[in-house]
Length: 359
Image (cartoon, rainbow, N blue to C red; front, side, top):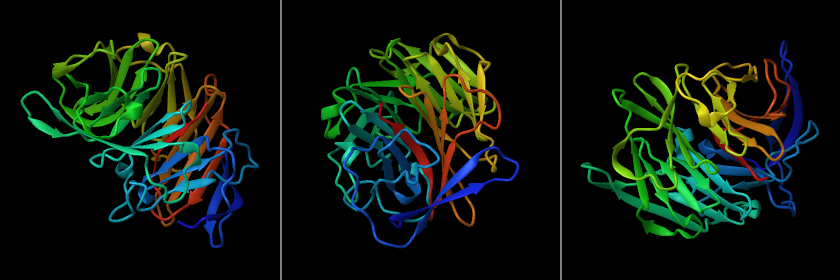
C-alpha cells in the first residue's frame, strides 16, 4: 500500500452525500504526527490497521491514515490469496488504557499497548491463544472471530465461528496459551445455527448480546448475568430479537441503552430501550446512508462521547473502494439521504472490516 495520499472531492449525481476520496499516489512519506491516534480502521484485505489523530472530522480533513500498522512483525499477516474480511474480523479498544485487541481467528487475539502511537511494521505487545473443552465435542482451539471488551472489569469476550462464547478474565495481562475462564454455548431451540455475526457487552445491566444467523433468519440473543453465566452445555437466552432481513453487524451503546443494527444494504436501524426488546423489534429510527452501491456491508461503531456514528465497508469492482462514513448526531438522526462526511479510497484488495474510536 502506498503511503502518500492526495485529496480529491467527488460528488455523486442524484445523491446528497459528498464523497471525499483519498486516492493513493506515489511519493515519499512524512513523519507521523505527535498526538496519539483516536480512530482505528481495519483493512483486512491488506492485513493492516489505519489510524487517524483527529476524530472531529470535517470536509477539510484530508486523511484517515496518519498511521498504518502493517508488515511481518505485526502478527496481522501479509496479503496473499483471496482478500477477505475474515483475516482481521474484529477489534476491541480500551481507550482509557490506550490498548487495542485484534481478532485474527486461529492466530489468536493480538494486543497492542500504546495503540495510539503504533505505526509501520510494529510488533504486537502480546498474543492470546487458547483451547477449550465443549460438551461432548472434546478440546479444540479457540477461534477469535468476534471480540468485545468489558473495560470496567478487564474481561475479554470472544465468539467463535460455531457460535460458542469464550470469556477471559484479566484481559490486559493475558499472554500466550491459556484456557477460557468461562464458556457459553447458546441454545437456539428448534433453529439450527449457521453463522456468527458479533458480540457486545452491556456492562451497566450485566447483559451479553450475541448476533448470529440460523436457518430461520438472523437474531440477536441476550443473556442476563453476563459476568457469571457459564455453560458448556447449551443454555437458552433470556431474550431473542429476530431480524428477517439479516444482521450484518451491530453496535450496543450501553451507556444509553441503545442498539444500532446494520443489515445488508447500507442502512442502520436504531432501537431505543434495547434492554427491554424482544421478538421482531421495530426500529425507532432508520439511518439511510443511501450509498450508490446498495449491497455494501457496513461495520459500525458509535462514539457516544461525540455522538458520531462511524460506518465502514467496501465497494468491490475494478478499483476496490474502502468507504468510511461519519454521521453526526447519531442518537437522534433519522431518515434517508443522511448528510455525512464520507471518505472513499481506492486501495488494491481493500476489505474494511472493523472500526473503533477512543472517547
